[in-house]
Length: 153
Ligand code: HEM
Image (cartoon, rainbow, N blue to C red):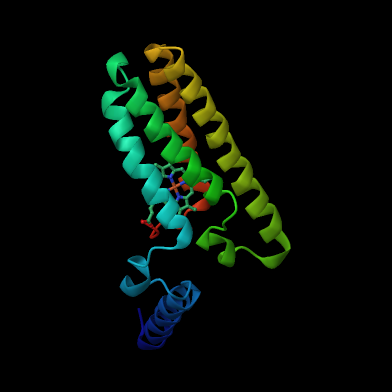
């Protein structure tokens, strides 16, 4: 490589590096990472109840307590459906309302699943409850994949 193409090559690479950095969304630093949003607070409530619930879901003698955890999750989900994910701000304005509506549809799926879960515990059908919990984990996973910023946890 003669000297001139080599310098041009270096300049090109330097420009590319700058472009990549310029394309990074603002507020992606450690300081914003730890901030818990109002939606994040409801998610944390759900998470605490869901973890305890999963540990005892098979135990029919704990169904009263399991129902209380489901109620906590339901209350949090009812608030979550009224809130907006942080990621919405990164969506082009023309598509933002649709993004928020499909987020809400996914939370409503969660709410419907929680109703099924309550019905299973009330019926003493713990095998069904365990199956619904597995569905809820899928709803959670998809919800996070589609609506949560990777650094929002
Ligand atoms: C059992 C169900 C779920 C659990 C246990 C759960 C748990 C969590 C947790 C622990 C966080 C991190 C909260 C923090 O920042 O401290 C979170 C964040 C988040 N979750 Fe969930 N989640 C569930 C379902 C869902 C569903 C169904 C959706 C979407 C429809 C969703 C959307 C989000 C979003 C968008 C955030 C980031 C918060 C924000 O943007 O303000 N989650 N979730």
